[in-house]
Image (cartoon, rainbow, N blue to C red):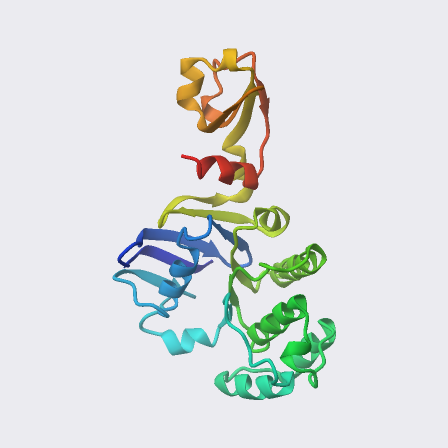
Amino acid sequence: MEILSVDRLTKNFKTFSLNEVSFALDQGFIMGFIGRNGAGKTTTIKSMLRLVYPRSGKVMMFGQDYQENEFALKQKLGLVLGGINFYPKKKLSSILAVTKRFYATWDDDVCAQLMQKFSLDVNKQVDELSAGMRVKFSLLLALSHHAQLLILDEPTSGLDPVSRDEVLLLFQDLVENGDISILFSTHITSDLEKCADYITYIKNGSIIATSEKDTFIDTYRLVKGPKDRLLPDLNAKLIGPRIHKFGFEGLIKTEDLDGISDVEVSQTNLETIMIHIERT
């Protein structure tokens, strides 16, 4: 079942535009939404949610038009948006009391279970929480009303490796039974290597790929060799090549490997793919 569909979403600013952004997410999966800083990830999410108003395009959630059913659909969404801070001197209990008023399906039992799972203390103030605990508290707020779709904008940015790993394991646990889906925006590609099922890649406001993660990674290979092996035919096929004193390296589409010899060809990963694509 398609839980989220974004169709030709367009938004224009003076110095940046979203260009007919389209992708879809099925129920029970994690989609990594990647691209360098400024590529359009946050603008896409804000346009989807009408936090900024797109010029055109359509967003469907749970089979319904988001624009026409915004209030009802927000009851099914859990949002963790980057750059949103809580009042530092407020106790968690106070924030919970305010937040629960907005959701008809808020579940105090689920909230209590998550407080225990995340080792959070309702009597603590926000400024007493570590960065990792603040992320977990944001996730608690997003999950305590039985959200079926989580939209997360850079939720692991600034976390230490241990805290990031804990959050990623939580994401995998959440989708395990197939009821919850996650759209996870990040430029930390190693996080997506661990947990994502699908990848959608945005560059300069345009989607350049959206597919299963393994399929996307398998589309490319890394090629290395001495300078004298950088022949015109190979050079024309390379993506974001880098030439240095020891030779060259570049990305190549797997389908373009026929006829390429006397060079080192290896499998690659999301970070390497992103680095070379962003050089073009």
